[in-house]
Image 1 (tube, rainbow, N blue to C red):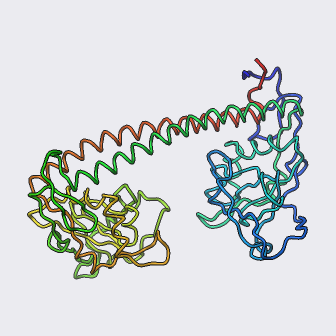
Image 2: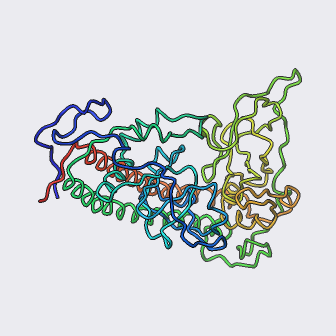
Image 3: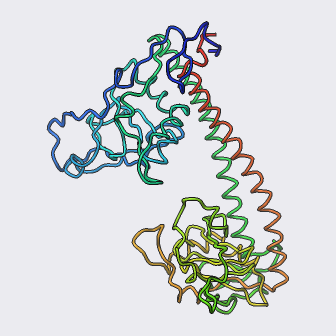
Length: 440
């Protein structure tokens, strides 16, 4: 199939849709689909019977597919959740899911009945409109326009079903709808395949980086060095001339408050730590994570080359070395490296996924991602302690090697972004009539 312009166009009457092919019709979404239909037949489903349940996080927004259904007893989901059946289109109405095109066609329901989050809006339409409407709901021009009509607090904005009901849509002929759907199925599948290959490649390089850090901080640069058992829980073997030291003997815990004698803060430069990124300025983290306190005088001071550990999130990589003077929330442990040790080397030790995984054994909490490291037990953990000159060599070696890997990963991410945007552009241009799908 090839893409070209239609022979003639007309004004759609709507600025965002602009011109559409002359023979297309303009309709409202509710003219071709029922929105949030309340009726469904449960048949003879018993309260204890397991039925498909779909949380928001089980929709792959990039590919527009359901990752997997979970199962809940019918009694637990029959009230308070959104019901749907095979062929329904589920559309996420809440930020950030809506802006990313979190939309999917339901299929393979065992009993032709499923339930999901109330943040889904259900579109039920005839088969001939189904794929076209699905593609329309995922096109970026529609999503960008709809974003302006969302209401609610930041981070929890929603689009209303009443807005969607009267939203205009250009409708091609039934034959064109089939052509468009077949073309988009094939083209997006090809793009998704390329993206998946790149994602796998990115993951491989990320794993290579993890392995390189884990191995080098424990074994050093000399691959022929004689090894001995470290007798530390996570370390394994280390070069025979290395020692193992406790955290409390390698670092001093910095506890200075961001408070002057006159009651004013010492600094207004507030820092934060991002997972797998390290220490950044708080203003650069956007709406992610905890908000900054109005009173920053209770924060802790941090100096350049201090190692900062988020005791709530160190298990998932929220740790890093500070490059500047500033202040941090009290949830952080701030470590000053003693003179016989290199902070740059220990920055890599803390970034070791083996070490982070081991810290789970001295953590408490109900949710895995919010487990908190026990500060007293943390001080007594044993970690490798090479001579300082070796620590410096290892840090420089890892700086060089990981920067090259990061460069490769960055290029792969750029390729993924380009393909993702190309995918969105094709969907947008085809479903709004900017280009015509023709058989070759």
